Image 1 (spheres, rainbow, N blue to C red):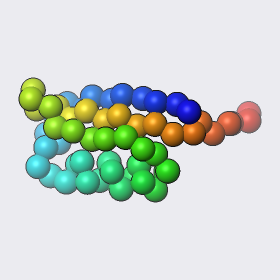
Image 2 (cartoon, rainbow, N blue to C red; image 1 turned 45 degrees about the horizontal axis):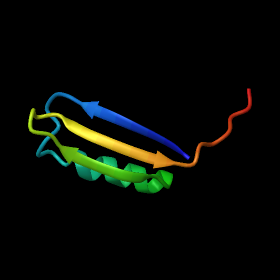
Image 3 (cartoon, helix red, strand yellow; image 1 turned 180 degrees about the horizontal axis):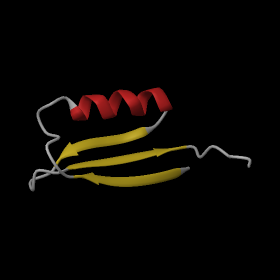
Image 4 (cartoon, rainbow, N blue to C red; image 1 turned 180 degrees about the vertical axis):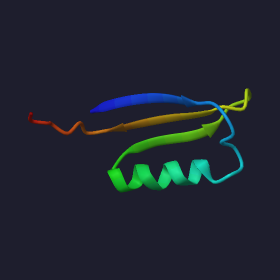
Length: 55
């Protein structure tokens, strides 16, 4: 299991950004949350199984 936290800055609130991120996460089989922060940024916490990659 791998978990990552992201912080997005800029004009992302009120334009469907959280909904968009949630739909992409669902399509990838990830769990977590997307939350507006008091400073105007958006925090994303995502976790899921890590896929192995062969080069």
